[in-house]
Length: 248
Length: 257
Ligand SMILES: Nc1ncnc2c1ncn2[C@@H]1O[C@H](COP(=O)(O)OP(=O)(O)OP(=O)(O)O)[C@@H](O)[C@H]1O
Ligand SMILES: [Mg+2]
Image (cartoon, rainbow over all chains, first blue to last red; front, side, top):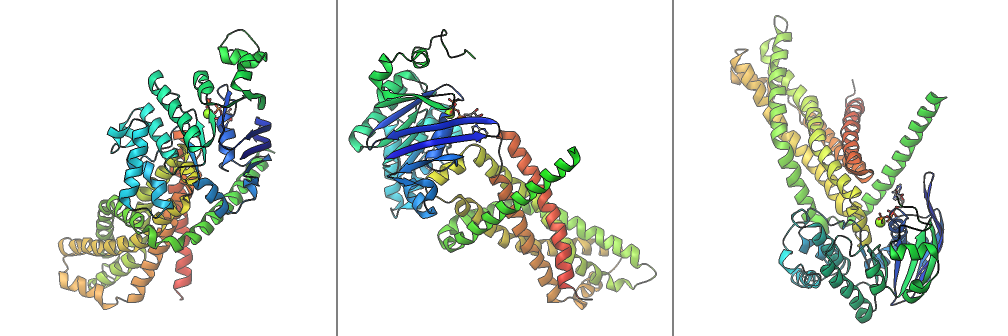
């Protein structure tokens, strides 16, 4: 479904991704872990063409997004949802309007139907009481959840989550993990999630890939990850101070 | 070597910017078909622009009219009959002063706010969010601002014309000792619609410059709050310079001696 081949990207002298390969099957959720600054967000932004690679390709359903026409790319984007790391909520709109915008612009649904769907999605993330608030009036964690509600508003086939549980308390985070699992199991969403929250990674991921120094150094199931003897991966999972990863 | 490199980089950036602006204009043209569906966005922008600039335009044009009456009277004394004061002031206001000064004030107010708003949306990934929702940000954000700039600038300049001439009238009556009839007759005597048309054409071009450059700089902002600040400054400086240059070019096209 999503296939990343030999993707490389540099910003000036800084090489962020080197020949990254990653395949995600239909209905599967892949989790990309890695340290802060390792290029996880950059990798995610390549998938729907927000950043153009220096070399390599991203294929969606076998078609390279670099070769799509604008219209084809828009079609792929409309059936995808993205949760940005910073939320990226429109600050001139209420949470309800934020969640409903994609439906208002891309479908012929009535205002009432759109508001109903948007309210339901906000309810899924526990924000039913804040639908008429502006992003600046709610907490960071609430913004994150509203952004998640927006990402799944159009019943996407593909969802990209950039740190879905960062900044949430453990109980709310668990609720979001359940929601992501639910989306995968019931709605057969194909997803890539970026996180450093190992608890969340094991919970939501069918597969875990680790990005280190611009490369995918591990790619396997959650069980493989736990039993792997790769020292980088083990140190990361356990959060040890001893090991190949430098502490700051 | 350093100097040559600096010049080289400057030229390269200029060429890149012109290319990017061209691409944006292309996307803008393809968004024109969607104007009917975006009426609400356009009207919102028109209201915002009007509210933001009316007080400033009022203040600027009243004082500009007043000072041009005073200047005119000073230059006319002993050479030109004062009944022509209204003529001189009227022409200067309608052709030059109202369009150019209004445009410069609006560039500082509206152009800056467009750049700051879109720049913030860029650095907080709101524009990326639009893209991945399948919404063309040029159609959704830039087109309404440009259309609104094209419509609102002539309206603001019309308003500035009236206020400036009223400002001049006040000075003519109170300080130059002309009767209001003499002054207004002077305005009317050589008034021509082609002058008004010239001024409003300029206003439309300036409206395009302000909204397009503001949007362009905002769209290309990068580097957090500081980057937004840079984009805002650049929007005001670039559009002010372009207003003055295009004013000259339009004058050479429109007036044949
Ligand atoms: N637009 C850009 N221009 C220049 N450098 C960039 C840009 N975007 C990202 N980078 C650089 O790429 C590297 C990877 O950034 P990225 O945001 O992907 O990290 P990350 O793995 O998501 O980290 P975190 O977990 O902290 O979010 C960083 O060093 C960053 O400075
Ligand atoms: Mg990141």
